[in-house]
Image 1 (tube, rainbow, N blue to C red):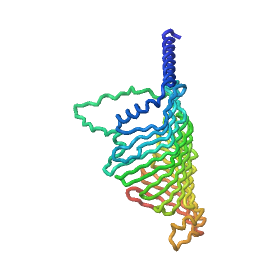
Image 2 (spheres, helix red, strand yellow):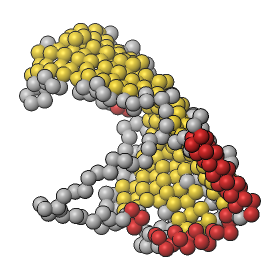
Image 3 (cartoon, helix red, strand yellow):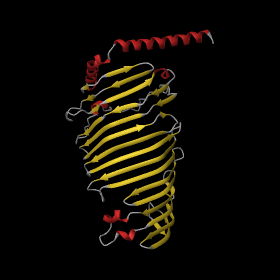
Image 4 (cartoon, rainbow, N blue to C red):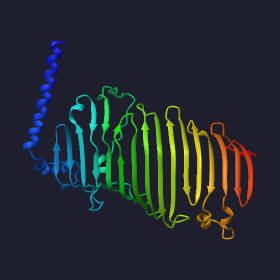
Amino acid sequence: MPKFLKITLYTLGAAVLLITLTLVGILLFVDPNDYKDDITTAVRDATGRELTIDGNLELSVFPWLGLSLGRTRLGNAPGFGDQPMAQVEAVDIKVKLLPLLKSQLEMKTVLLRGLQLNLARKADGRSNWDDLTGQPAEVTETPSEKAPPADESGPPPLAALAIGGVELSDARIVWDDQQGGQHITIDNLQLQTGALVLGEPVDISLSLDVATREPALLNHIEFSTRVDIDDTLQQLSLSGLQLTIDSQGEALPVSPLKLRLGAEVAANLTTQQATVSDLQIDVLGTELRGDVRLEQWQNGDARIRIDISDPQALASLLPPDLSSQLLSESSLTTEAAWNLDRQTATIKTLQIKAAGLQIDSKLDATQIIDAPQASG
């Protein structure tokens, strides 16, 4: 090894050791909680908001550079009430120190508990985050002005990314839009992921309650899947996808209403192709099974079968003089293809079974966007 390179490596090693010892010394002799007032003052000077840190601040350096934060609140903008705009019960973030020297980001599981966000917009369009984001000034460029060349140097990309996972628990988000007449509350939000590593699959599970006022609906949603994205971020797959929605409200045709969906999804963003296989939808005693294939996002084909397993679940949707028993053992099977570029659609097979009868048909359609014409 050249002498110059040895000296350089020894110097870098000594610098890293010195920095580490300095940080360890700071942790041993300095209590970050002594600087709460300085932090809150800096936030007040920068934003005009009150930052309240009720919990403890904890720092760590080696081998993990970390921050643990207890209950913390950020005040609301003037005119938006006394409740905090944001609040969190606990945050824990840790980054491994030595991999950072190699442009590698390695983190433990990111923990965020008790997050509460109160987002609001007044009838005049003002929101309670305008003062935090700032309003970009409009710049009028004269013909003689030339935009400066873009700086393409930028920071170097990460050589590797590894996060132990994300755990978001007991979160609540309120969106009060007086301008649009919407009020949405997301409550009991729970998000959990497996390890996040570039190019490797990750398991995701999500559950939440969503309440709306117009219309008055209450929904409980559960979602889980395994996400696999390649290194180029162009190929995506969702395996074992499961979605359950339990809804209730007077605006629904049937309340309570439960929907269950399962599927295997694969997409290629470069070729604009996607497939949905093993599609399963269960709602109102009706089962849908099928496969869908897309080309250029808007062209494709599908094979679908619909079976009515519980006619009584559909009784409230039928005319009073029509018995739900007529739908017993009813089914619809079809195979179709469409091409929006050519404005054509074909139902290759269509079979309907109901009330002891069977209908078989097929259909060809042209100009389905401009002037639909069908024959069959």
